[in-house]
Amino acid sequence: VMRGVFYLAWQYVRCHPLRTGVLILCLTATLCLPIGLHVLIGHYEHALERRALTAPLVLGAKGHRFDLAMNVMYYRTDVRETVTMQDHHRLRSAGMARCFPIFAAHTARGIPVVGTTLDYLEHQGLRVVDGTLPLYVGDAVIGANAARRLGLKTGDAILSDQSNLYNLAAHYPLKMQIVGVLAGNGAVDDDVLFTDTMTTWVIEGLVHGHDDVNSPEQRGNVAAVGESHRIASANVTSYVEITPENRSRFHLHVSDEELPLTGIICVPNDEKSEVLLRARYSLSDDQQLIVTSDVVDE
Image (cartoon, rainbow, N blue to C red; front, side, top):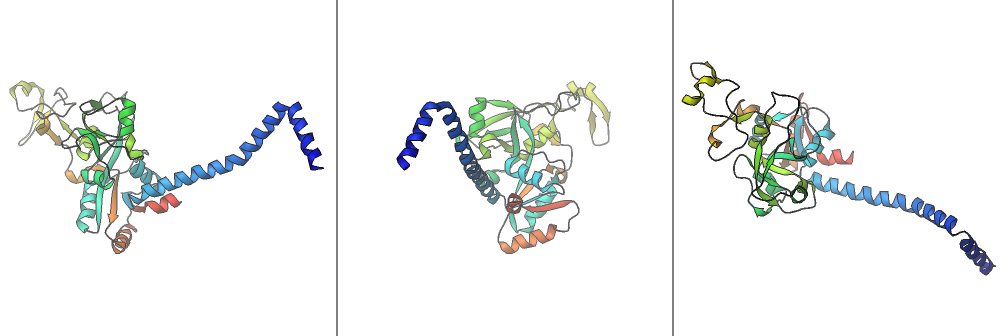
């Protein structure tokens, strides 16, 4: 009986090869799609959990916790409300965690520009395969994938993207020097431009440099003179590149404590420190301390 069934099936396949092929393809897709989705989702979940381990706690402004987590872990989502360097100093002075400031609000040729510290790069295990880490304001290191995709190398320069092309009063793009290329680590860091926070504040317009208004050449560009300061007019040339010659002329236009951060990564010293930090910010009206692993689980 079974030989007859197989014989009939084989004859049907021979007579209708196209119809049989389509049927086999549909059945294969039906069976493989759930398996493939399960594997892909499992891989993505594992990657998220592994990334969350590098940023156990994140302090940010009150708002959408998913946006805050994605900004700090993947540097992609815009965060409208920010915390400040004063919050960073307060956290660090508590002595209960290692703290890493993050300011990720700008891009350069489409890739995120992340302002942070050298300690954070060490925390993420990032190292350069060519050049050095950022040492001065205006220096930047580029991820392996971004360097390959944009055709950039150590010694090249890159301009920050204009935030608003139709705003004539907007700040000029900043020309940053690429001083190093990072080794690939298979994470989002391969597609990022890292610099120090001061450089990102220059892009933000909170720090800038211009010609010396006290020089005789700039006398006609002084709008007003006070007892202890001079107010320059818009005719004073602002620098769009930070060089050894003009680096000392860059200055803040806000107090150091008001400088913004999109988030602060906290790595608690121990479980007790984590509990105390979470309790401290649990009743805050304008700030939130999120546990990134909980956000990933959600």
